[in-house]
Image (tube, rainbow, N blue to C red):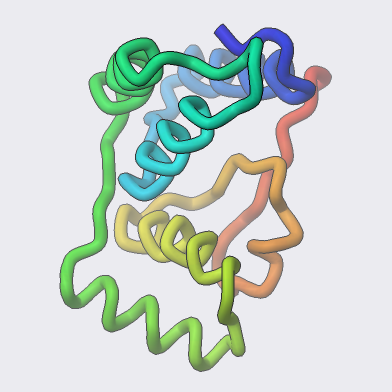
Length: 132
């Protein structure tokens, strides 16, 4: 769908490779909402209708992945880790993703935004490349 995006080929290749190898896909609930927000606000011609964006996220992620959302204890842990790591501002949202991964016992995180996750201990960060 987003073949125009600079990271589309690498992301698709990495996901297909890992799923074919038997890995499971885990998605932070926050990421699904953020993807919807981005897809429906992009400038033309890439902006998607709310119907198309919702369908894309539901079919590709919500229905084919374990979606992890933080509960009250998860948000307590998130805020404690944010304070301990000195993370504030917009990076707090990245920490929601990292905390969701920790909650799901996920060993690694696939992202093109690796710099925002380097301060999070005990989480392997993998930046997909088409060569992977």
